[in-house]
Structure formats: structure tokens, C-alpha cells
Picture 1 (cartoon, rainbow, N blue to C red):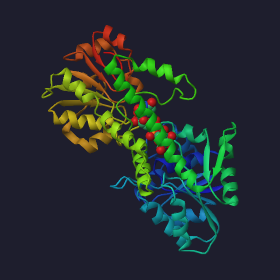
Picture 2: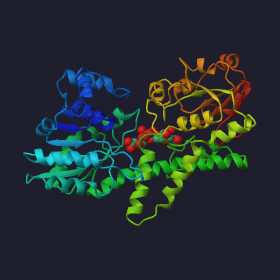
Picture 3: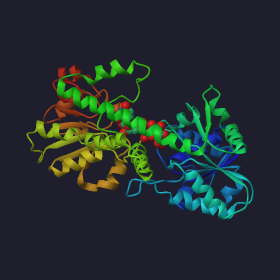
Length: 434
Ligand code: UGA
């Protein structure tokens, strides 16, 4: 099939590349000329495991092209994906100006029937708005479909190629059939293509992310409570996760959820509730608890150093909001770093991928280390913010030699408490006895 993807951010690029991989002819459109030129030369503008291989293969096979022209994109595809940014407005709602701006131009340029697909995460009712904007500009027939994505950063290619489900929000048979045909190769395993109305599809995306954020936040509160009563969150997690109604995944406590999706989507659903006179009390609590959780290590660090961090040197391991990405949006590390700097601490940071992004933001306020061990030179403590695999099996004796004191504050519970203690470290983690 001929497919166009408007917007080559994270979602657009993964969508375009993976659709080309199953034999479709794909054009990806972006207004950013430099980025388009880069992509035409085969350079992937984001870090996402395995994307580069598929990208190169499909460009070589002439199935994946790039353009700055919306008109070219619109004329090419039978299905036009909108993968445009929906940033958070000041009041927490999703800013639809990019989506509706492109919809208007599509209306002006439309010459024949097309399926316009909303891939961006958009509030309930957006597909109606997109429809209205396009029909104000044209009499040509078209359909608007909502097709939310459930890709995780770091696993996006795998998630796209082997989805657990495809959600299609469409009230048109013609559009539903085309969409089902497009996705059929991805669900050969028998996973479902769930067709529903547009509004339910739009809400499905917010409900999924908000549910997962709530699940994590609930576990974070259980972990905090474990510390007070002397229980062990690992044991509680094993105890409840084996109940298939609860499930084992997304029960890992830590220093809060971050990234470009959960924080934004929870706030947007909460705001959407307000706009419709519904008070999402549970989401209100999730937002508040997560804000506190991001800084949960600070009182523990202050307590250990008797409230005096001036001149103390900390090695911060991990800056990305999670492993396998260079994304630092809403990363807990940034909140911790800000607090530690306020207290006059010196910070040596290391992250396998995210340091350039942090350097753009924080410049010379902190020191960037070449590797995890260099960051620990003369350190009073290590603070772990992201569970990169490389941090899981450190050479503890090397750390002891490098550091002023053998102290670890672990925001991601990477180690067995007794193992670290037997290495001579003072070890503080989340929801477990020290
Ligand atoms: C999330 C969803 O998992 C995807 O399904 C969705 O498509 C995506 O948002 C999106 O809306 O685009 P992502 O933000 O890439 O994906 O990351 P996750 O792996 O879900 O992690 C989110 C945050 O939760 C991270 O900060 C992670 O550290 C935290 N987390 C996750 C925990 O603290 N504990 C857990 O048990 C799991």
C-alpha cells in the first residue's frame, strides 16, 4: 500500500519505517529541512534500538522516502498518518495547534479520497475537530480514523512489529477495511485488531497510560510504607504480582515515572476530566505522589549527611528517564540534580546515552564523566537514577578504591541489599530495609 506519515518525531519515524518493512511504499514528511536532508542521507535523527537497521534497509529498497512537501505526501498515500506533536499546554491540556494546522492544509490540498489517521495522543473528540477543520476546506470525500500507538521507547520497533493489539477508532467501513489490511501482517500471531468508535479509541490511549502510571505510583506508595513498617517491597511485589489479575509487570518501585508520555498524558486526562465537569481524583493523587517520589532520595541523602551537602561530591549514575533511551524529558535525575545543586553539592554524572541532552540543558553546572567509574572518583556517594544494565554488576572493590566513602543511594533497586552490604557499602534503596 502507499502510505504517508506527516511528522517524523519518534512515533512518525518508527511508524513510517516499520510500515515500509512490511512492503509498503512510505513517504515521511517533515517541515524541518535539515532533518529531512539528514534522513535522506540515511541518518536516523533519534536513538532507538534496531531502528537504524530497518531504516537503512528500507531506504535502499526505495520503500522509504522523505520530503518537506505536505502536498507530495498527501498525493502519495492512500492512508495519511498524522504523527504530530501534542505538547502540554500551561494548563496541562494537549496543545492541538500542530494537528489542526496540518488538518487545515490537508483540506486545502485534498484531491481524492484519503484516510487521515490520528496517531498522536489526542484528547477525546479530536477526530471530530480534525473532520470539521478538513471539511471546512473541501468537498472531497475523506475519513478520519483514530489509531493510538502503544510503543515504548527503547522497544518501539519490536512493539510496532509485534503489537499486543491494534486499536482502530473508525465509524467508516471503508476506512476500517483499509486500516485492517495495513495492519494484518503485524497480527499474524492472532493478536486482535480492535475496532471501535473514534472517541473510545482516543480515550483508550489515555486510559492505558494513566492506568500504568497509577499502577507504578501505587507501588511507590507501598514501597514508602514498607520503609516505615519494616516490610520489604520486593517480597510484597512477588506476593501480589503472582495474582494474574494484578500481573507482574509495572510493579517496580523507584524514583517516579517520567518520560514524554506518562506525565503529559496523566495531566491531560485529568484536565480533560475537568473540562467535562469530572474530577479525576485518582489522577490528581497520582500526579502529586509522583512529584514527591521524584525527589524521594533527597531526605534520605540529607539524613545520611546530617543535612550538610555543601562540597559533598556525588556520582550520579543514569540521567535518561529510563534505560535504552537518550530521552531526559521529565527524568527524575533532573529533579534530583536540581535539589542537590541547591544544597551546594558537586555532581559528577554518567549516562551511556543521555549526557549530550543533559549538557544542552545544564551546561557546566555539573561534571560529565567518561564512564561510570570515573564519575565515582573521590565521591561521597553514588546516586542511581536509571537502571541501565551496565550499572547492575559494578566492580565494587574498584568503587571502594575510587570513593571517599562507600555509600550508594539507589533509586531503582538494582542490587540485592545483603550483597551490597557484604561489599562494605552503606546502601539505601526504595521500600527495602537498609
Ligand atoms: C509508555 C507506555 O509504556 C507505552 O505503552 C506508550 O505507548 C508510551 O508511553 C507512549 O504513550 O508513547 P514509555 O514512556 O516509553 O512508554 O516508557 P515506559 O517503559 O512505560 O516507562 C515509563 C516510566 O515509568 C519510566 O520513567 C519508568 O522508569 C517508569 N516505570 C516503569 C517504573 O517506575 N516502574 C515500573 O515498574 C515501570
